[in-house]
Image (cartoon, rainbow, N blue to C red; front, top):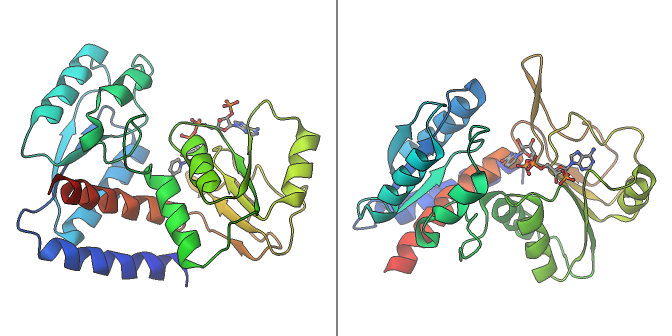
Length: 264
Ligand code: NAP
């Protein structure tokens, strides 16, 4: 099943779950910038919320907001009983320590699953793993190569795949080029989360049976690109756009509903 169809069918199920909930889930989105890409991501999330019957409070602060002011808003969201979960939309301005904000969020309300004590899976890795499971991909003993080691994608993805008994290798900007070629040649599953247009391209060889999950997003001259050049000779390559972004958006609302179920 294509990602779009898969997401649509899960959204329908989620809609039915939310429809019968006594209290409607209420998500808050805290935004601290006004760039076009962030506005577009939030617009997408608000559209999903509307379709799913989820209430949304969108708080938009100017880009020059001080870190201590952002922390105050986070604290007020932590203490607001009307809000079941919230996200602080990334990227944050350069003068803000994202790490401080990440750990200030109450783990019980951390819909993104970024807090070290969060019991929820981070949205992008959750979305990817659920999709792989839906495709009935056997991960046990498979070679999984993850490119990127961020706290929001690479690291939580590695943990989830280790938990599924895959053999996990995490590569990053300090990985030697020739090593990257060798790891990729052996990979059964590749998850790329870098943000560099077509980092993986004709220079790289993959198994014909490989699955490539392209998380990366970069905009060049207004056009959106993934980390992987389209048309690799593999079993499955997720598209950009219309791929992992949809899985991430779905996982966000699945996490929100999970928070409410945990509360009950
Ligand atoms: P990030 O925090 O900037 O991390 C990027 C990672 O890529 C770092 O670990 C970095 O290594 C590594 N890297 C950079 N250049 C490299 C190279 N030439 N070779 C190998 N590794 C390299 O980014 P992120 O937040 O994880 O996001 C990554 C990308 O995914 C971005 O394009 C973002 O927009 C996209 N994204 C998409 C979704 C979605 O739903 N579609 C969700 C989240 C993120 P070092 O650690 O050594 O610096």
